[in-house]
Length: 335
Image 1 (cartoon, one colour):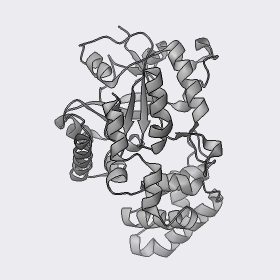
Image 2 (cartoon, rainbow, N blue to C red; image 1 turned 45 degrees about the vertical axis):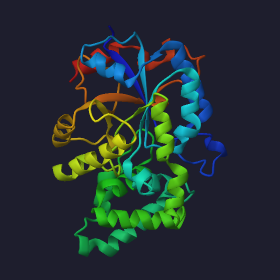
Image 3 (cartoon, rainbow, N blue to C red; image 1 turned 135 degrees about the vertical axis):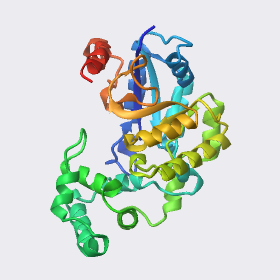
């Protein structure tokens, strides 16, 4: 048995260049198909239940096992990903937040994405955010703008400091009420005032999700409102998880041995305790790396971003950094 598992994380998968928002950061559909060609040539795509069984010592995974995961419940996944997986006999694991499907709400994270993809200069957005902070500084006890920028602008893997600042200050850096008000204001200004209509086009609906489940795809939890779960109280965490599980059970997902995918990768000890109490079997983080089923906590499995995996079967395995499973042992030897 191999202890190594490559878990690949996907978000937007669409013909991006032809879309209304060609600046959205996602995966071109043709690149996705090429990536599946690479994975099919060099790996064996396994099912979520096979991974759970392997973690419990009840089954063995093949060499070069791979699990495909799709966050946020986008209609992209139904329109483009689902048919491709069915045609290839592969299972995908999909994680729709409950509120986007049940309430017709666009997630704050997606409002931010589409504001950034609208063509507005990030420096202009930073200035607009600073202006709002100036207006509300006294009433909300806010810090100085420069301090917020230093805290939240550190460069990430794929974003400039300005874009990183915009995402993080709007995702978690401000009081919830002010943050939501500011995000909504920017979304209405640069994207649309029709939130429900936008949500209906952006996310899968219950019929489509049931179709995925009936076809053998895995559906798992991504919380209710896609919040940083490690910033919430235990009571709020439990509410997020319970509403998500109620939603999943209505789609036919069993109440035990389900899969959790942490929004933004955020978790803490109180959340993990709740998940164990609710009989969660597997949790997916955004830590970058190959999973080691003999060493990783089953609720804290690392993943690779789609950009970490080659986009063509013509790419040899020797050119793929993460093909070397000794990296798993090396990573754990440093922790």
